[in-house]
Length: 140
Image (cartoon, rainbow, N blue to C red):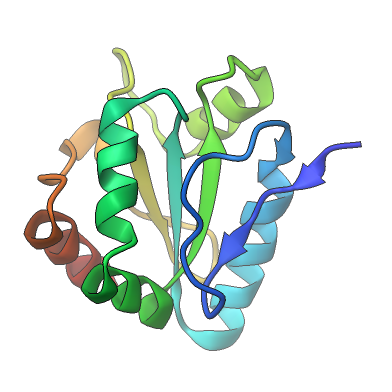
């Protein structure tokens, strides 16, 4: 039985990517919570060994960006670094198109589970407080 992937909102940001978690279940729970409270869902697809993902985690954990995440998003972190086919299936559900995925892949969903934006096709914002902060504020 897969453990549930952490979903953060009011509980704060969790760094790293949970291996073997039920990511699809966590996204479903986050969408239901977003529908109830009007927040968005941020799905962060990445890997524990990914340097860019670690850089994004450091920014997400800062007080300013962390407060923005808590106020506006339910965050689900999905490990695509372990080659779990179900994680890649979930990623492909939200990101169409060709080419390799540049991690982290950030997907914003509304309270109905519809994609608002995803960075596979738009490109990642700068992995700084200014860059990620502007990205999160734009889609909040």
